[in-house]
Length: 187
Image (cartoon, rainbow, N blue to C red; front, side, top):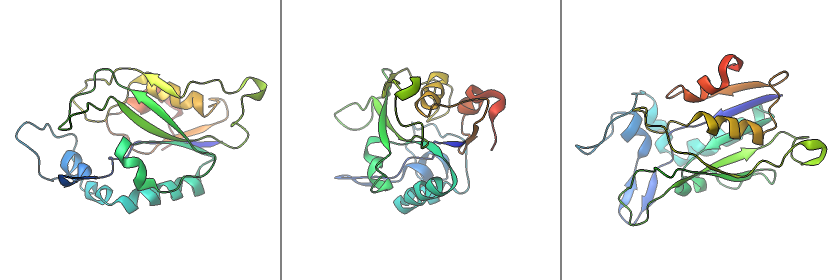
């Protein structure tokens, strides 16, 4: 089966304080505060500041892959629109999350999971994977990096079979997902 892990720049935040473009701010040439540390620069980061681009990603994944996972932010879920019935929302809890500008400290990130057909049941020993992972975010100097256990958790949720499955890491970013996948990387 063909599987994908997608960790694109998160959709823009739209709230009482206005719109805050995350992709161009953290990965492009967008406005930052004096204390913000930029991540790696990507010339096309700005396209991810359009919520419609995130919906297109979901539709592209549905048309290309048997199963996939998309990392996003709690307020970014809406950018993906209505999800297929087979999708699940999993939660990565980061006990070391950095406080933001909101009064509430967000310590979790959703993962949209679309398990491959035939791997959506716990029959036959498949399944029984918790939909919550509590694991600190790695501090590697790269915003959005995922710990190795995150990748293992996502792959387990898709009932990944390293002998037969191809896994594409669509947004290499820090390289930690690719590293956790090892030699299986296809993209």
